[in-house]
Structures are given as C-alpha cells and as structure tokens.
Length: 351
Ligand SMILES: *Cc1c(COP(=O)(O)O)cnc(C)c1O
Image 1: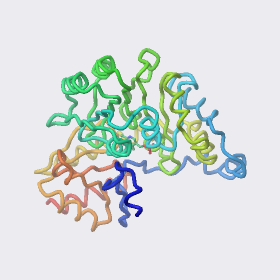
Image 2: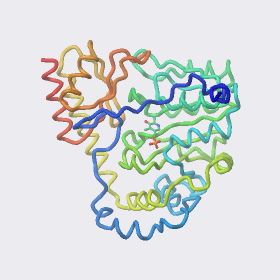
Image 3: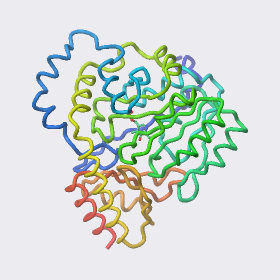
C-alpha cells in the first residue's frame, strides 16, 4: 500500500550513499584534518552554557550572519545560513523549481545537484566537462539557449575534478540565463577567487559557501548562501524556522573569530603540492591539477589501488564506476602523517 502513496519522483529513487567503512586515515570526504582551535576547546564550556540549549535557537542566526558578512565583505542581509550548503541546495529547489523545470549542472560534479533535482521532479541536463575536466563554456551557453533552464549550477572549483571556471565565463553564463545561477564555492578558501562581489549586479546569482571544508566544521552542518536580498527573501520563506541549532551557531561564530583559517589553508596547500609531486613520480598514474583540498588521480586498476589502500586503513573516494570518471580515485589532502602513510601505501601497491 505504501508504494502507492509515494510520490512518483521518489519511486525507484536512489539517494546519496554514505558508507561506513572502518578506517585509520579518512581521506574520502574532503574534510579538514584539524581539531577545533585550542582557543575554542578551552572555552567550550562557556560556549555551550551561553548558547542556552533549553530555548530554541536564533531562527535567523543573526550574529553568525554578521560575522559571515564581514568575512565575505557583504552586508548581513546578503547572507542566508543553512544546515550545510546541502540544505540550501534543497531550499533553492523548493523555492524555484517546479516539476518539469530544467536544471543544468556540470558533469562530473557534486552529486547533490542531481539528487535534489530528482526529488524536485526536475528535468536534468548535465553538461559534460572536457576530457581534461576543464569547463566547456560554449556547451553551457548552448544548453542554456536551447533549454532555458530554471536553475544552473556551476561548481567552482569543481568537486571531484579540482578544475575551475574563470570569472568572465561565469558572468557570461549568468548574463545568458533567465533562471537562477548557483555558483558553489565550497572550496573557495583553497582557490582564492570568488564571484560574491557581483551579487548585487546580477539579480539571479546565488553563491554557495560552507564551513565544512576549510573551516573544518563538517560535523556542525553550517553552510551559507551569498546573494541579493530579493532572492534570499524566497529562501527565507521556505526554510524551517530553526534550521541551525544553537551549538552550531555558537561554535561556528567562535571559530570564525579565531583567525586560524589562513594558517590551516596554507598547510593544506603545501601538503597538496607535496602530494602532487610524490604522486607524479609514480609511473602509470594520471594526476589532475587541483585548486582544492583534494586530488583526482586516475589508475590503470583503480579497484586494486582502492582495496589495497583500504587494507592499509586508508579510505579514499572511489569514483571509478562513475561515467566519465573511469579509473579515478579522489584523495583528500589530510594531516602530514596521513599523507605520508598514503604515499607510502601507494608506493607499496605500485612499486
Ligand atoms: C562538500 C560540498 C558541499 C556540501 O557542503 P555542506 O555545507 O557540508 O553541506 C557543497 N558543495 C560542494 C561542491 C561540496 O564539495
């Protein structure tokens, strides 16, 4: 009976699978290898106490928005906070995408664009990246002219390929679009280039950011959107009133104020270059350039490498069965210890 009650879009739907494989070093989900800053740990009791968990959280996350606005050099009214940027992708669908509307996104890219499109009953048009995973802007503008999408996703830098799209090309795509253009900047801190400065020039632009990657707060679930007030008005209409819990708001605020970001990002960038250099020495594998905290690598036998790493306790992300990513594994740049362990393991597997 339940089968008959389920929405058409959900029948046969397969959601994002998160597997729980035992590991010693987690290099599969682009998380940061750092603990909370010491200053935050030291004051954690105070933070918890002052966040008053017996009352509902601030529904608009006002203080957090102010701090994020300062960080992005925009006004607090240009910030919308979500329970992870995943939630914001979902809310954008809720606010703007009718069943049958066209949603365009790069392929290969972040899986959630497709997941939430399917839940919304959208018509998905993936736009292939080039062979080397660079953005093919011509294909995007062609598809936009032909299908007039309600929503276009650009992931910059792109997950899982590490490739980027240039500012002028993003602007070209925004200008061509009658729908919303979402630029997902989850890895902005590792790249350094952003499009947030033009949110008031283009009424259809939403920039997505997160505290899950460079800020190292994936477990708190805090993402945010930067856009003009007119768009954010509609996201506020469809959100749950208390979407960000008190502890997440309080801890995120403290972490934003500690100023550990730069040092941590520099560490990751240095480790990334070291890993790339080591990887390039191993014959028979292809390493893709990266502007992020992860590296996409192609192997002749990705299965053998994935399993061999896992036997050594190293968990990486297997994309080798995804169309367009044959042979590819994605490695998150982690602590020095983890990175060394990974490289040594790989050298054992591919002598
Ligand atoms: C990790 C990631 C996100 C999700 O971030 P959350 O804020 O943790 O939901 C969004 N977009 C891309 C491209 C990502 O890689």
